[in-house]
Length: 262
Image (cartoon, rainbow, N blue to C red; front, side):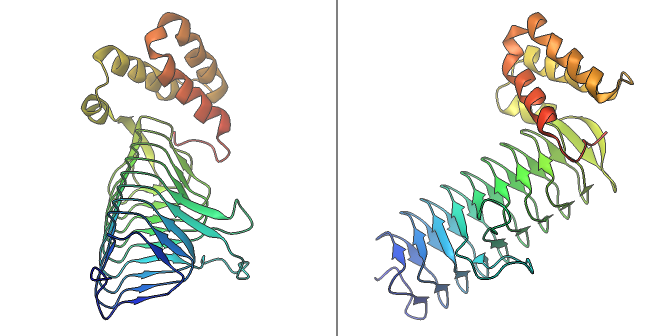
């Protein structure tokens, strides 16, 4: 108990690992579970049916697990699940899910969530993402692994952002952003691929070249989306070493419901 500041309010039903630290004036509700090695900053409020994994750092004044900002919400025991190794900075707000979706908001592992970010109900954030200052995610947004969102960007509800994709500063994203693609603007326009990010993650020159070829097919040949998908599918026979990237792109495009950024 020496790791919990005397001014913090931790409900007796909350379950905290023995080494969790809780700063001054933090408030932790009865249905909260926090794993080993995690740190909760001063004045942070963690409520709702919220499970937080190991080695997370939550900075001061964050609001985690509050009720969704959805007028249809009627107090159902929806959930927020956070994985391991995340950094959640000042004034971040993350809401629980709604019964209109799966009832859960999720944040995976090793995500870097900067100050003033809002993650609304039923969002699903994968792993290794970076969400820069003041990004606002509406409900039901999905972010793939290694996605990067530039500061002050806004993402419309139900939009999906593919793995390794990236938005520029102040981007308004109202359509799905395919894997590997960078975009910027209001509304968003495709710019290129996240080549530097791929290099940093160990992609070979050949794999990056194949990603560029997929981008040219989607954005530079004047093809319809169906024709571009067919041409990308045919690439697997020519570049078997890039089958994972091709499958990732094809799977994303097949599931697109809002159209894609073009």
